[in-house]
Length: 137
Image (cartoon, rainbow, N blue to C red; front, side, top):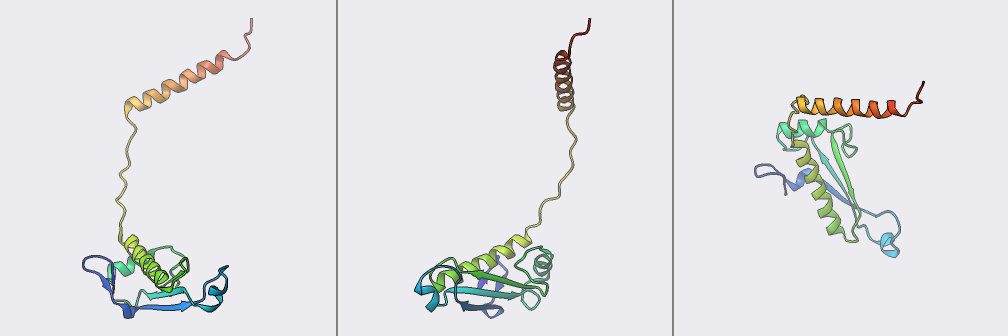
């Protein structure tokens, strides 16, 4: 079971986990042991609430395929168990980040004093630059 929030839980049978061989250097261990974890989670077929599914499918994330399947590969650690927990943590993080709705920005106006300061600094700068010009008699 993967706990997303107090009320939302993903059962283990909805998450497909397979062990594969890790990439890169690592000596004989890499050639012998399948320590990397390949996690697949079908958003449409899951028991997530409709709002969660919508928000996940709206995400522009390279880990979500066009078919709506989340694919996560974890291979940082040397043990299969650590990689499995890392992959599940990443899935949990992805789902939690999808449901956070950012607050709507309210446009603001610059204050009168800030406008006055800006214009004063512009005129001061202009006068400094005009003093650099050649003096014509």
